[in-house]
Amino acid sequence: MQIIQTKLAGVLIVEPKVFGDARGFFWETWSAKRYAEAGIRVPFVQDNVSYSRHGVLRGMHFQNPSPQAKLVTVLRGTIFDVVADIRLGSPTFGQWMGVELKGETGRQLFIPVGLAHGFCVTGDEALFSYKCSDYYAPAQEQGIAWNDPDIGIVWPVKNPILSDKDCRYVFLRDFPKEQLPVYG
Image (cartoon, rainbow, N blue to C red; front, top):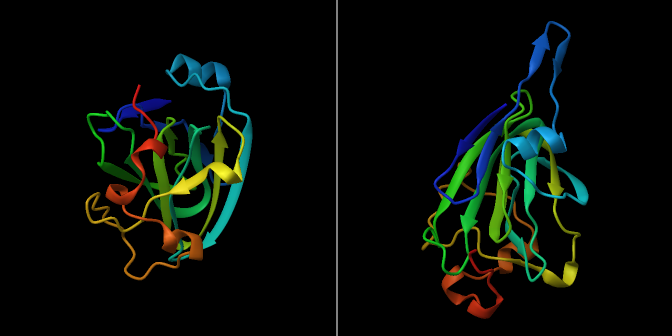
């Protein structure tokens, strides 16, 4: 397994070993011991699966005051996965990073607590799985606008398919500061 540091503190790209042959492929998506040895020591409590078709954009979501660390895996298809640092006091506050995740590569993204997360489907479809370090709390679900010009995410889709909820989120500069996560 290879761990790649990103420009955002704590955000890691995980490249597990994928064993493939003419029959298909196999990879281990989670092993608490192996991931802890790699520096990911998170007690995940909930697993979620999402299915989306080409052009769907979901994000930029976060939960506060019970934030969730996430380990993101694409089981089938291709997505562009994005994280934006919205942690007050962070040296990379307002910055973003994105990575392509494909089902056949096994590549994962680890997202620590306090960051906004979103993705768009760039292939025909995507089956997306993610582990969470805290339970989903609908009353704490929040988000920032996917097209915030100050953050400047460069999405690879021109006219994304969005939920009504994702269309209503505000820019980071307009978000109440007291409701943002704090760095460290």
